[in-house]
Length: 145
Image (tube, rainbow, N blue to C red):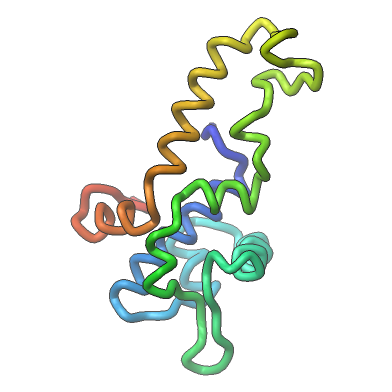
């Protein structure tokens, strides 16, 4: 089980796959992306539609169409993908989902979780799609077996 929702996991994987293919000069269709990131195609289509509406990925229709990233999209932090799918809750929410939890009225996990949450937020806000993409191209990371 990951730290992100399944939707967010697929969104991150899809954007990173699209970035890699864009760097290689290709646009990717839903079938290809779904197969490469091991995602249900119908579910992925909805995620990609949302990311496209948010301007995080680009798409064109037609025989040479597909999803791709523009050069400036590589400079976006990973946090923008997470926020588009999850909202800001991951960066400010309570580990136990308690609405009353705050600095002045903390839940039992508040202090420990706050540190983890803040570290994760820092990584996602300071790491760009392009940085991860470089790691994929250089073989430091993988998106599939």
